[in-house]
Image (cartoon, rainbow, N blue to C red; front, top):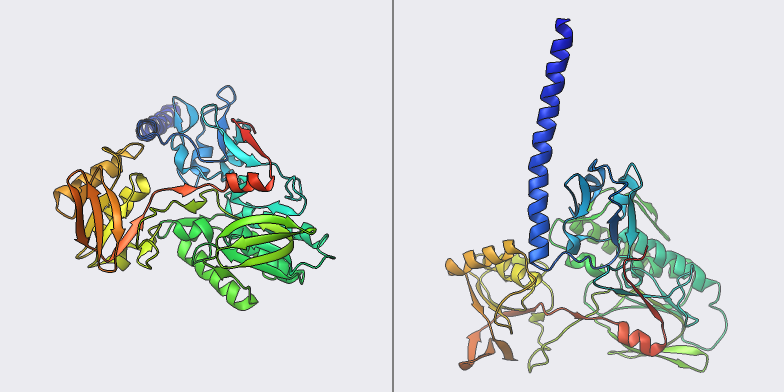
Length: 430
């Protein structure tokens, strides 16, 4: 009988510990949800989970499986607490023990334009294919798989015609890299272009040491790559090694400007030249082309459009332009480097749609004298050793070694619609 009391006591202790821990975790997750809503960051950018509250049992398995911390449990039900961080991983749906999760594009408030593509990733324009993030799939494994399968389909129809290439591939992220390797494997004449000066697409711009892949991926010429979890740096190093070993040719700093149909094939025009091809595979990201300032001197090599490594700006005078989280985070992290002189320039009178954590850290760095915030300001011109910034008090020159523009991107949707590619606007449709 005493044993029964002992077992009951142990069981009660375990239950009390679980309830206290669950309450503590839920309090933290409620705070994350409130911060996301207040900062205007609750809307997911693309594919994301929707939870059926009638089925959800609140086990938390979905939240534990999410590599981005986008899901949490609030009031006993799974909730998307950090929508802006969701990358459409899909592990949450597989982890749910009661099948309460569906993956959807768009929300009731904000629709997402997704190109209309076939099972072989061909658009309504015969000969133009789309794979990866532009088609709504930003997950590395799935994007690489789509690039490979799209090239398999292109192989079937690549013969004939007088075009210079069998296929032009636009974009060198996971989908474009995989497609390029498949083109080599199929012995196709290909041209692979990338608008930036680095491969990897969005992965290249992930924060340092971010986990970038959580599932194996199949690559032509290479076979199955069994990365379970790998940091960004190791993944980029692997891809560079693949390019070196396979001889994959990439045209960096080439931005697609137009696609035209001429005499039965396509002419892809870039800022470098023009290429004729029987097929075109678009593997661009949804972030599009970085929005530029359109000021004198912006073509300088010291002007970049994303922060990759804050350490490279140590002991430099840096101007960050923008008012979103990426701009604030860039200014904050650079200001933490030794000997930096940082100015954050933003055209509006206040920061909106940014995380409270970034606001507080920005204020801390300001108060410590490590960075200067200039609201209601704009860049007037850029020269090798200085930058002119315009405010209500006029134009003033500042010493400058580097400029980082975090002003968002121009989506490729209008360009693709001009080609004739049809888009469907998804409002939370699975």
